[in-house]
Image (cartoon, rainbow, N blue to C red; front, side):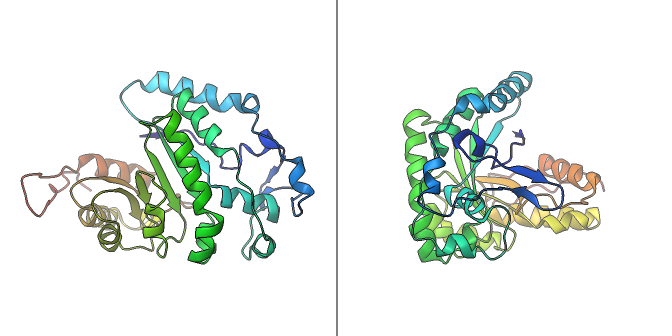
Length: 281
């Protein structure tokens, strides 16, 4: 699987919210939207302003052919709204939590655009969904994700959709209710527990702790094998439980992929024991 990096805030200017990326602070929105009047500045997504994303996906799809899947990704409405209201990265989320309403965004159109441009699969990142109590997530985030999934299904019924929430230990069963195909587990959830809670009728993704990539390679191999074994015999996408940390050794990232590619399941076993990696560390 290949991912073409396009920040979850990339579509903001396409519906009326310009922003800058500062080296230390990260994304910064100079004029956050904090009133009903401010919402009037938003407009339906202008996909012409995102043509570079579509062009990049088409080039990548042509290059890889059928040898690998191309993954597109978008931010969930709550997470995007957090940036729009707070004006950038925040640890308190006080402004947006104090607002009495939120508005859905044209994420579904952006997903469909990515699929039509060559993405085989889409991941929805509700990066800051875990900052909400579960009952508030059900009110402020889940309905919009469910609506996005429904809209995408009408145009792209064969496209798998992954949903990831950072800090999702208290949300797994609720995430399943959105109708997505795959639930991404973060590294704080035990994979065996996550699989038990979600059942075998939905796929899971994850969830090696990104900090493990700083470990000696034999220890990293052990952790990858543990996660894969806990995930069960089918419906698992091996991945980290969050993004690659700054300073992660490149050789550890390469090792992660090599170990993953070297593992195969023994489907004849009732215990679904996988073959030991033949990779020599």
